[in-house]
Length: 273
Image (tube, rainbow, N blue to C red; front, side):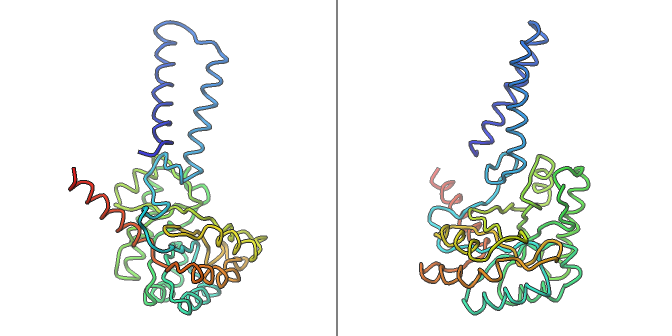
């Protein structure tokens, strides 16, 4: 179990214990209540905002220790303006990647989604609507959005995605329950390019990613801007990133390769027990 989740569970038990003490023994000093409350809220918000902590949901944020290669991932597509250019650059380098597509964009450009798959890349879900306040939606709204995206992508590609990256990377218990019910694997990242912002500079994006290139790295990039109002810096930075992978002899693999390797590793552990 991730350390941050253990801490959250421990804090929850502690909060329950404070309430029980207040009921059974008497009022707790206000300063203790305020400190405990603020600390608990801060811990809970960290769980929502920082996927790598895995407070609420299990997530693949890096390949296993014996992983080989780098998994480039691209969010917020597909876009007819930029996704084909990303695909061409990947083809030239002989690199496979994972595209977490937004459902309503896939619905508008189904041929582009099929092109991603035809070129040997993997398609995962990035929700249907990409609500920026996805973590504040009701449990029913969360699951309906996720199911809508999965059903759509299955209709387009003939295969139901098994990988999911939450919008903005935010999670909570409602999202965790939906992930479990839909049988999905949540994918995070170990290297964040910060290329999705309009003000991002390609040289800084490339330098940031190249520094983090190593076996097992999962790199978060964008093949499209969320609102199609600019071209992500990743498009200009990608040649340098791919050159960095080539120089370090790091093959480009899909996230599925890391997931399969981790599952095989867990199976070996179970057999040894």
